[in-house]
Amino acid sequence: MAIALVLVLVVVGSIVFHIFSPWWWTPIASNWGTIDATLTITFWITGAVFAAVILFLAWCVYRYRHTPGRVAAYQPENKKLEIWLTVVTGIGVAALLAPGLVVWADYVTVPDDAVEIEVVALQWQWNYRLPGADGKLGTVDNRLITFENPLGINPGDKAGLDDLVIEADALHLPIGQPVKMLLRSIDVLHDYYVPEFRAKMDMVPGTVTYFWFTPTRTGTFEVLCAELCGVGHSFMRGEVIIDTEEDFQIWRDEQETFASLSES
Image (tube, rainbow, N blue to C red):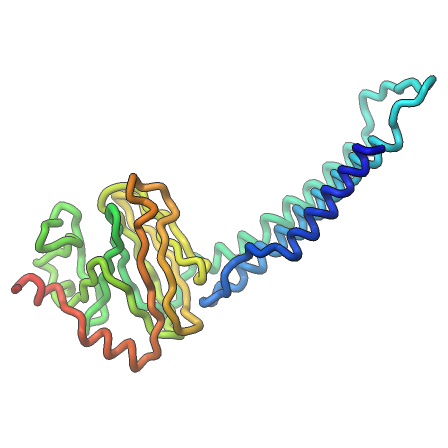
């Protein structure tokens, strides 16, 4: 009886803690509210299964507790029960997967009006590259990386001469503008993550990954590396600042181009 009561208290305590937990996701600052909705659906489904299983276990402990003279019955198969479990489990798995597949399809389908911005990671800082007046990013090659050219921009590509280079500093973006983040690492695995944007993606050396989002409120948001990348991993932090269009243009005009950095 005591064990059954403890199991019931575990379920009740878990539900109460979930409702009143002081740890919850940060207020969203992008268009990815569907990710929060998917997480909520996952919590409901897994929480219901958890409660059902533990309460069923509590009932079994109480209902089939030892009493003198009671003998267990051996029943190796129960086709009706197996069918019900298969159907219910299949529905539950589908309900968990379907919302995520829909969100993922949106996550990797970039709008035509999105602006491409490159994020370059290295131990242990974030660098950025924004398109210049031509609206296009120039080509890059890690073999071209030097102290004077930390992002490996191809100096022979005219499209890259006006690219804006942001080295180990905060990234500014205008509110309401869809952005495609091109992610590149020049040493080890990293992961670009801004909790308020609900957006993150691994950065794999030798390839370019991406995600997109639209900032929905101004403010300063912390960038974290969500992939263990060495002894300085915990210090690999940065900032993304979402500006009004006017403030963004002021900041943009203050940045140096790759051509000006090459001349200095």
